Length: 343
Ligand SMILES: Nc1ncnc2c1ncn2[C@@H]1O[C@H](COP(=O)(O)OP(=O)(O)OP(=O)(O)O)[C@@H](O)[C@H]1O
Image 1 (cartoon, rainbow, N blue to C red):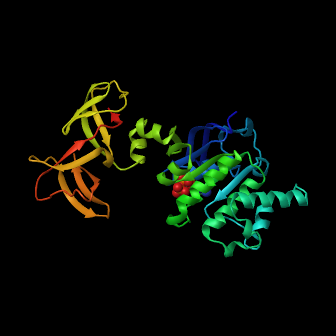
Image 2: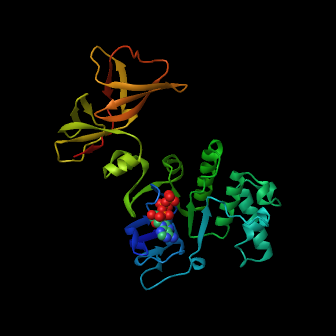
Image 3: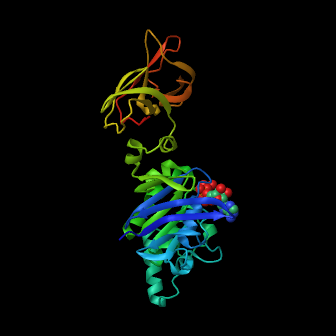
């Protein structure tokens, strides 16, 4: 049974629509990331799941049980949901152990002590039980927050930008650790982020949101290989459109030569554009140049060349041991790749 099912959800603030006919299913033990531009409705969706607001239309089911519909509403404290937010929201006057024990009022004293000890072990903070939140680093505070959210065995975990206040140097280790903990506890989770890199590292599937709807749901590989729209392709990373003629199932012709696709192109149109990412392009010096290099800079292991491609700017990285001679013409080759073709 799916952990979460959302059907035809609509929410408006004073008549201003924010969530529009949103559908989403999260499988058992799955982590899904809601990813999208600022204001697309990620936090509003999370609030609707948590029960912090009541959508005007549509239904939400958790483990098969309806918690929100037009006629029916289960209060947040009865949804058995764990939450973790970017500002940790630990109680400053309680110790680490007391913070973790906070939601466990139904357990006996011994059960509570055992559960807290187990959670501390899980997040590798066994020696920090007596400390107060201000005596911990940001990453340690987030570990306490995840321990507290998981301590009462929630059906579903909601995480709203939990890593945005964490130093970039330790962020990806923390993301990996918290993902491992969630997988170990076999909890389903919905994670909200602006950051593609965080989403790729943390989630099993990504739900790309656009204007209050899920534009596409899939694994990172599915989204990269088969973006359902230009918006999804563009959201996944900087690129440029190049005019293309489709020849057969897996080849296109462009002004830069013919390009082999590593997957079938699912389109019946002949004329269109392909969406090129910097990693699909190789620059080299040639007798007859085709591209204008507007800028270049050295960034350690690579040179970055800003090139103009059919009126769009694109930054292409090349190994620094093979710099281009910019006094000579520069040409480009499009490498074989999983082509994104749009008619
Ligand atoms: N309490 C409110 N009253 C009126 N409008 C609101 C309220 N909260 C959010 N909105 C609007 O709803 C839209 C969606 O907001 P939401 O917070 O869900 O977006 P988001 O995708 O989480 O954005 P961000 O990534 O910036 O946090 C935005 O246009 C926002 O201005």
